[in-house]
Length: 293
Image (cartoon, rainbow, N blue to C red; front, side):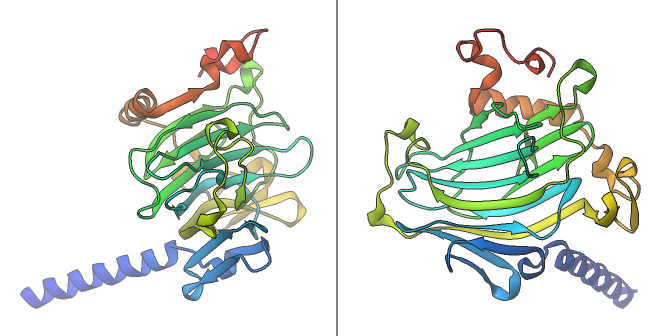
């Protein structure tokens, strides 16, 4: 009986190990380094990616696939020490003047001061929906998971599975929502000392260069755009109008009461800017969704 239990346990562990092995995608297969002249590198047999910024240039990469809805996870370890003036951007975006976009941006700071996590949502080329947060940990000490859950009803931003923001589909009330344009995943490390740290008052200290950010643990449980205006979700390939066929539970996921309470706690404790509470910015009135979210 004991040997049978041991065999069963080993079988469970092996299955778990196999599932974990396929859950973290290989950067060599999923991404292209798109700029930086050698400052972006894929290491450890495709399990680690690093971006570097120096006085000459930053660097960046993009996904080989375009996604139309999905749950996208990435583990990041941000620039340590004096990172003032630097921005590590991690976002989904389509192309063109009426593009859609879902943004994480990490704004560096001087040593000992916290990063700012900047989020934004663009619909049909229009953004200006910024919410900013401090983090409840040092994002330079270790890797943490930053996730975008995008389905037909919600865009949910998460940090280590903690929801921090939920942008709702309010199309029925006249608010545009990203749902038709497939988006690639992009990331870049670049110099933005004209605005990134304290509104541009603190400049990049190049004596600390090169600056470096690291990535691992990418996972996309998503519908992938394929030829002919179709999407592939799991084993199913369907027209865009049927994008949910074959998708996982994420396709209909929303925040339950417990997760809503956790999100509100994060927002009360760690949010430092919300466009919906900035009436001076909108003399003609706050955006419509601010009274509906």
